[in-house]
Length: 488
Image (tube, rainbow, N blue to C red; front, side, top):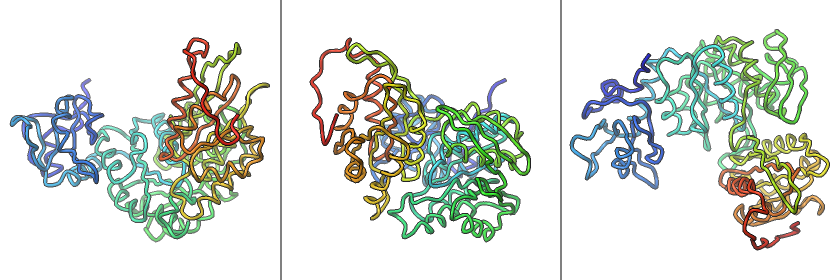
């Protein structure tokens, strides 16, 4: 059976009140000419540093089915397939709004200080056990990403899962009104993006904006263990959310964790979901994954999905690149061959998420000769308390029995200097300087966890370690990198 087009030209024109030029139909939507694939509708957005209209010809050359523009750039053929609108950002939003209106899918929105993307991916997997489900890709959760994600939702799916994020107050409310969640999850409220808020209470209020697009038949799912739970409940009730469910270890949580066994690569969970005992295996290590899985199962229940199937799906979760993916690297050093385990947490970082990742690293059996090595870059947007928050990671490093810490960035130096000398690996000003030092220091049997905010560019270190997969003895000799600050 042929899959219906995502956007027939006439329907896209009706949705945006635009003018169709040529006959076309689009199978996808893109706002980045570099990632256009044949069949996409390319939307020429304007940003602070670019104008998508400058890339219209590139998009067409890559096989775009059509291009949404609010002016026709010079050099574009007169017969090019176009959708001409008054404003392309408004046009994208109109597509998203129409996609929501034409679909009968039940929709869940996910926000929170940490764990949004992982929870979203787990939800898609859990809901897909019952019926076709769609989820936004990656972390497309802001004023551009959310409407783009919604415009890509096929009309035929039964469930939609959308991540909603923010850096400032007032950003989630319009996204919620666009997505109109039937169910909303707030994973937690922590001091993340604190540089843009006067208090953590302000962060809680900003997260609670997700209730603005919800109605009396909707369900809010909240972390019962979080200190801002009462504040979020008050917001949900003020906005007229019909039902409030909670998850956590709290005795009154609707999805309550009874106990769990945390293993190197998985967790066994014993929980009670709305009064029903449930045991399941979660194929991702760490208690933070366990707690968020409770919110996933509650959401599945609220969405009318099969809970047993959703719980079984938790055993098929695969952590994403940058968010816990595990990579095995064959390493050979000085005649010694073996495996190095790399845990890629390079996408983002906050005090609570770093502590959780350190706990996971501490639970890894590194073998008799291996070491548990944490590689940490700066946690950004923490405001004036940033130096103290970085230094405060000393306790979770020691509690998790981490053997060595390699650090980069001016704020993470606060942690590095606070550690006992025997726990210090090396320090460098940035990830590019630290990467060769770490690559030279690791050895077979080690487990290395890499984490930092996106702006710290910790992916550079991931790439350097992955390049070690080629045996050292088979590579041309290299000069030893200069050690920095108590380097190995």
